[in-house]
Length: 113
Image 1: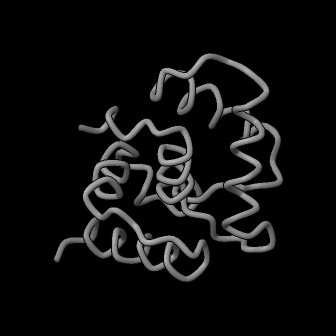
Image 2: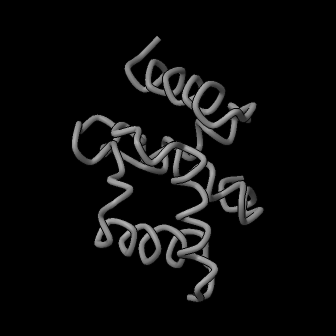
Image 3: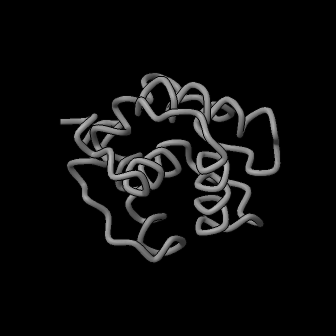
């Protein structure tokens, strides 16, 4: 297995253990690939759930640009719900896992097909 495959296994484990979700591995793989090289960078591969700037970036660059959602308060609510599900106290919230959960939350799996 390659490094990306190892990371996908790690992300799937987080979804199972921390988020109590059964991951769709095909979708998780596509979301991970969509994150590009950021998954290999220690800082860029994780999300700081308490950083308002980071939450705004997720809203603007992922939810609006990538998923094509209109800007509304529901976007911030969804991000907060995902961070709560992942665990606010968990310092290692992987970007690919957060993006995967947001994709599922909004039913936008078709973006990755």
